[in-house]
Image 1: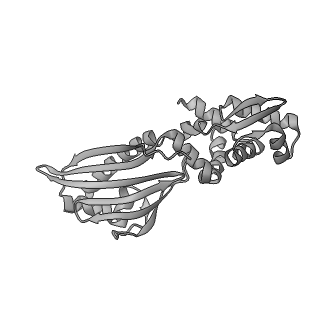
Image 2 (image 1 turned 135 degrees about the vertical axis):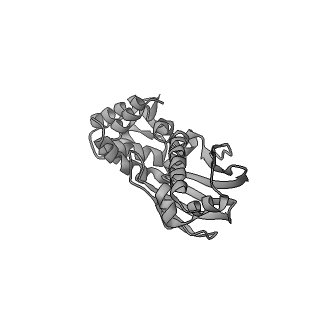
Image 3 (image 1 turned 30 degrees about the vertical axis):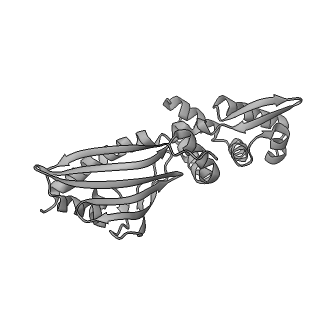
Length: 108
Length: 140
C-alpha cells in the first residue's frame, strides 16, 4: 500500500460524522442508507455524500436490493495503517543499533 | 469471527561483542532498557505487568502493554507486546559465541492485516480512530 492510499483513508475519516457512520458500520454490520440517516441525525443527501467519500477511500462497499442501498464496512482498507510487520522491522533494527551503543558505553 | 491461526513472525539477529551477562543487564534493568528501547516499569519477574512508553507518532499512541512471560537469566526473556489492537510476543534469546553473544529478537503473533483490522473493529476503534484527528492535523 502506498502512502497516498493511507492519506486517502485518513482524510475520509477526518470528518466526525463520516467517522461515526463508519464506526456504526463496523459495530452493526451492513446497514441501509435509511438506517444510517436515522443514526447520523443529518439529512439523507448529506449521508449519501459521506458514503461516497468513504466508498472512494474503499472503506465501505455497497449493494442494491430493491429500492434500498446497503452499506458495509471494509476493514481491509485500514491495512495501510496497520502494516505492523514493516513498522516493527524498522523499529527493531534501530533499537538494535541503540542497544549496541549502550553496550559499548557500559562497564563489563 | 474468523479464527485464523496464521500468524507471521519478525526475527532480527545480530552478534554483539559483549558477554551474555552484560547483554542480559541491558535487556532487564529498567534504566538501561530506557536508554535503548523506551521508558518502562519492567521487572524481571514472570507475571509482572508493565508498559513501555514513547512519544506518540503518526497513528500510534506510543504505549505498549506488556506482561513478562519468561525469565531465564542470561539466556531467554519473553514478554507480551500489545498496542492498539496488535497482540504479539517479543522473545529475546542470547547465545554465547566465540566473539561474544548472538542476540536474537523474535516478535511473533502478527496476524494477517485483514484479521488485525477486523479485530480492531471489535474493540480497538475508539482508540485507533481517536488518533486519526491528530494524524490528519499533520497532513497538508
